[in-house]
Length: 274
Image (cartoon, rainbow, N blue to C red; front, side, top):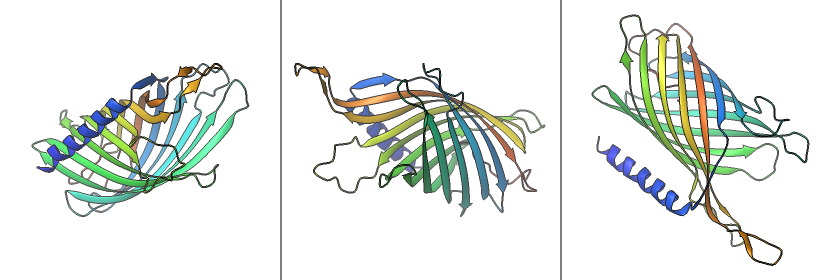
């Protein structure tokens, strides 16, 4: 259990550094993100999963569709023992953007990633750390991919309600994401250490071994270093520097568990965020 204070201290330092550097803060519209998942348990705690999600961006543009973003996720995870596992996930995303000055356009990207997970318990409380490395691959733009690394810390506890299988699972998760830049050219713009971060709170509701749903809320932060903008007379109109774009998000995950191993009493099931 000595690993937890070290990891928490590391993330606290990262977020403290980012909050000091991100001097300008802009809050965006709330994103709604429903998601449907299907999970197939394998031997032990291993599993396959597939998920389809939609995103609704609340904007002032009348031409924006109700769900302008669609995503598909496929993944596999193998557990070596009760504490350690590894897995791979393929994320695909399609987002439609609309502006006052142009017709609707679409952006598509893939994000394959591999990860390792550590899972431990203290009494009835679950502690997990998920370290992942992925590559963002835009399908619309050539030679603009990015290697990303993320560390997710989460804690939860399952509260059984009676003998019918009904249970609640409150959970809190914190995840910073950084851009892995191995070497920056002299003519390239400087970028912040953190690319993205998310603080997520949720309450999972298990109705049966085969069906559960999870309403959640998160604060998503995107970090950037902007160039200053000037007026015609050369005075500074908008100062440059570190900035943080805050995006509130509200979601609902619906999960169906398939196969003969769904009701196994020995199986430990992950939260819907995986």
